[in-house]
Image (cartoon, rainbow, N blue to C red; front, side, top):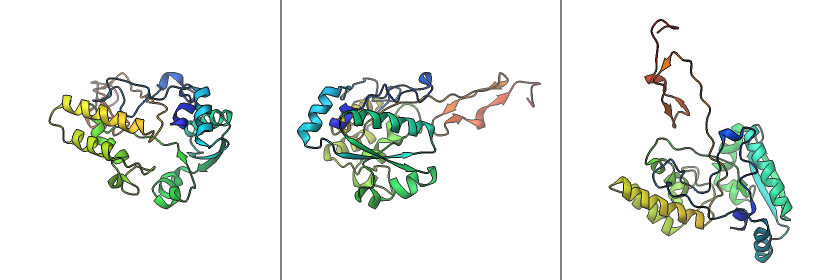
Length: 238
């Protein structure tokens, strides 16, 4: 939790394009079922963070941050977090990784984290669909041992009985209203345990020509669905 209070989302937000980014305060984004009622469990408070770090006995501790050095966005987030943690008296070591190795040689190999090669990894995820979107990402990220790498994406080995039960209940919910309530509870449980620190909820800029019709954005593709577009008659093949 002291790490969660120690980082300011306003710093890395934008990654050079402020209008394309929004701060993310918890796991389920506002556009998804269960994320409608936002909350901020760890507002930035440098003074409080310093007190908590000192009280924990980790003042001056070294934090190793894994990031993709070929990615401008990942590098900027690392630099921002590094600066903020350094101001709190912590020592920050960067663990730069090529894009090809970031997941396969670091995150998806359980032994690497257990050896202490990295403490924090700057990674991201995205929902596969709209609406009850947490179905597509919450269990792979936070459902205990079944979600541990290399099978899942629970790279920090988070395992909490209460969270596991809430995720199972939300997954099996009979109605959208029931799912919304349960996902919101699961969200708060994971955040209470500071399993991760959300930084930003990026928008994606997609462009289309005026003659392209029915361009529907698909989260799973991170692009317009090419199977459902058509061109206006008489224009470039229409």
